[in-house]
Image 1 (tube, rainbow, N blue to C red):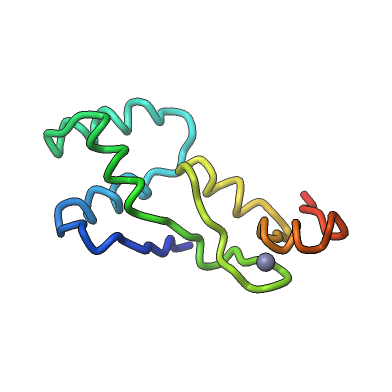
Image 2 (image 1 turned 90 degrees about the vertical axis):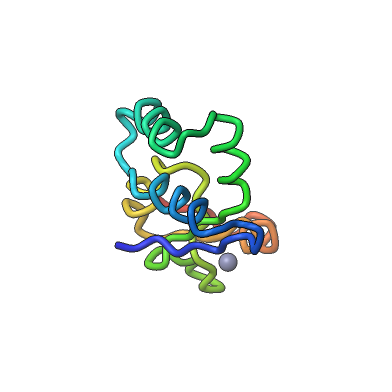
Length: 106
Ligand SMILES: [Zn+2]
């Protein structure tokens, strides 16, 4: 169970740590508290946190598109348990390319 990251080259060591800390949280129950704690411990506000997060793309390396093998792209940490519960997954590109012939099964 690991999350892969693609960081924007403008991010420094502290901000890449911030992104890793953000994505280390996968329980959807207390997301707000998690975000508040991150802002406190890094001494930043929500705006800075979320503008940093837009420069970091997170992927699940063990959930890949059944068709092309592209890793699952995460939007929020709560996606992690959801994505892991999928038996198969197709990326948006493959779904639109197939013209609706392949669909996500749950
Ligand atoms: Zn695909």
